Length: 350
View (cartoon, one colour):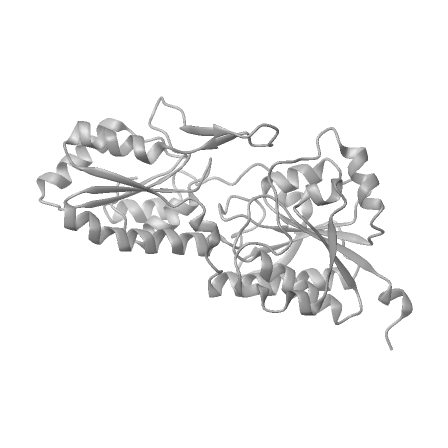
């Protein structure tokens, strides 16, 4: 028989930062697992904004059913507001919801904000970002889906590049970490992969392109992270968002590189910015399995009152870890990472 105390428990759930394929899978698996145990799950809308503005809804089994197959997040999300300077307000507003704990699925910005209000908070963290740059976990959900978008786009665009004798530059997301461009580029055997962790030499790239042109190649595919820059240069800033924890939004590199290639190599070039397409595809099977397993583990942690931990993927399985493990600086691609070496072995410029 279920206890009355268990029936009264209310757990909050929020999704913060940029959306990632698989967020709805976390929501559905957590709600289905906990509702079967008589625990209410209160969905906080639009990340921290939902706490500060008192916007939330009761997540029932019927409301979340089937959402795992959809991109985005049915709760909404935001990367425009943080907790700095509003710590007391955060605790006051959260306390008014009468929650027994909070589950937060987010990336570096979300956990940086939660780190400032963590004292006295019963929290379970679920690392999420398509950028795959969070410490403490071997992979983040949404990354596999983003790489699939990049690799399939390169595969499709290669036919156009060859048909028109062009170099096509595909711009992928990645402010400071090049995981998406690296993973997607490798999967599609791109001719060149440019990532923020490895500022490239313009002279070396020019020689590489001239060599390929001299070999009679009709077209080439280059994939570049939005935050990449040549040696001695800075990343291209497209615009700024006032008040955001990450005010500078990178973009425009691929267009500039395409024009540079035409001028320096005399090879017609075009650019394609994938942008939010990397977020908007329904999650792959890999991401669905990962979020299902993570959501069930989160539910077990709630049932066991095992708080102030994160659910992560390490050594081939989902497991628990200290929440501080995912509140560290971004995990970047190391210069000698095995994927970099694989690219070099294939003759890919990186």
